[in-house]
Length: 494
Image: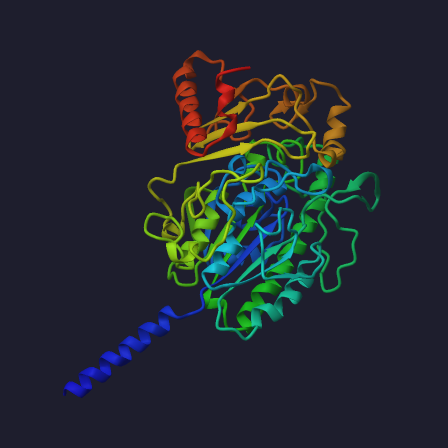
């Protein structure tokens, strides 16, 4: 009898060990400049995104997910560190003469995961620096405009015989703007890379008359032509996503793999990218936790990209109860002390965000009711710091350098959508604002985001909203203090 009890207990223990020993893999997919306006699962009835929609149906779709800055390098630094870019040092673009880079003593997600026993690989767009901070074991080759090829080139990594779980960072350059020419539209740039040769991709074209023009953009022929190109690029991503998920299933790891699908920020249009309006900050966030029974969840929680690194580390079992990285993992990470201008006194192992792993099966979640944003540069010549607090009712933007005209990214300036309206003068409409009001902004912009989702009616000067304005200013100051923002001193001078 005792022997039977012992054998039963041993079998239970072995089963338990088997369950906990599963390789908890992670795939983080980051597209480039894709807003929620371009996924069927977010309510667009025109665009064809069956694989994105299937992922949403098999996991959780966050209705209110936000980048913290609508600039590629800066946003990716936040995604991979869990720290706002004003604290990690990646104030803007890293490439060529822009030169921004993250502080040497910051620790990034792939480094944490490697210390936790993961093998790591990246493929596609990288756009952060230095490599020592954002180090992956392997940099896979692949055309970042060809998501199917990227998936094909990831197959061997997924299937590699190893005792370690894997982390795959899969980053497309679609649907970022390109430099070609639209067929039959010689005056309109091929803004979204559709003139390339992509074997294995089925071209999905869209009629300009059918596209859905979001309220932050002007409903003009130029805008519709560019949106049709944008949709085509997104449909290319969708095919790559389907191929990648197919390989995960073939390898038998789909049911042990956390999949997160996001974009670095919204569409590459004036009114979205480089701004802190919702068109730039609000982005898709689809998450499939393989160990949850509940599927097809639509979460109303407000999450942001500072939450991604802690969420992934939580899934990997790398966090303590207080949300910091476990000490045994930190002991394996050798980082420089704060000794020079390339380091900052930011304590590794702690984050500005928090894990949302525990709320993936919940439609409503207490305490997830506001987000913050912090933008300073895009390109080096584009100094325009903005700080944001947004809850479910109101949104406050502090334009710190409001005396300056709003600066344009080079690709957005030449966008046909913008140039057509700019040529009409300062009073020309642009979404819910005008060309002139877009370029010249006040110090504070306060919006009732429920009544005014496209941010056209600034309430900061309305006496009826004075208490709301002051309360949100106080929240901004607290956010800046909590995250060690150097620009907090601007409250006291200039």
